[in-house]
Length: 366
Image (cartoon, rainbow, N blue to C red; front, side):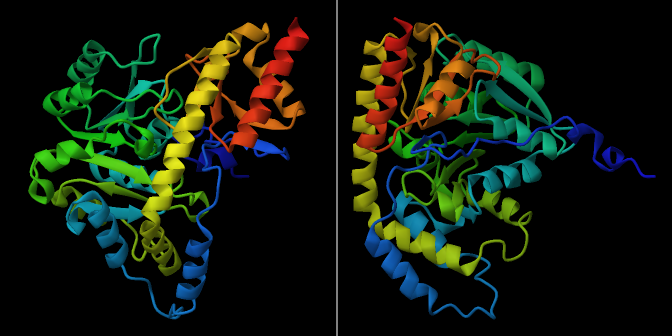
């Protein structure tokens, strides 16, 4: 009888999927989703647009309207834009195009787990550099990893997940100067940050740039469209062309293209949502500090904090919050993140519930 395990590639057997528990709770702050849905007008316009879809026809393979809308928003040429089913599919396409067997990918831990996970699934060798105690990437460590491993792809996450720390512009420039391959700046939370690596692309010549820089974005966070699974990447036109050769035909369905194009009409509402989340982020950070928690400065829509003041481990605090119907992300078993939890910035009411639950835990300890 066939051993089922032998059917799976040996290098994949030890991998575990990227999961976040979805529990039946009143306050869900574990997956960095937007706290509010898109404007009602978006839903009305999308519903009307869907009635015009010719369902018997394949979608626009080039996603022309959506790429043009994204390009207009960022002030780039549509040839610099590739759109896919979520930013994870973008990352996978990058690894398929520029990585593969015999090539090395560099990450700097702790960081977004899917960078290494996707790289391994396409048979890249993954080299992990280290961040310091403040979860910042020091220039010396970046140079060391690049010099020793000569990566085909260097992943930088800004703001970094799960720490919320932004990458420095100097480090991005250093990577571009020293790395022999592609530099990817994952800006899934870029709208919450103080600067963007897209500025470097603009300075380097836009569509015709030789700079091997790719900047990834998502609609899931600031556009309140996690349910749509829509992401994109911006880079030099020649890199986008090479990546498009890897995509499956008609990979992006017509309804999704419409949803993304219509969403971009509501930039004013998006900017207001971002501002409100940033204000709440500051309030939560100060409250955590006042309670005695170690909390890391964040330029994302979440905060990482350590549970030491409770006198309990991360697993216990996470469970105690669940018992109070509040769900956050348990990072305490992840390498380098002992005792750490990550909380998404939610609505003011949900944030109050989270802070009240933590305060209740502190009172129970005393």
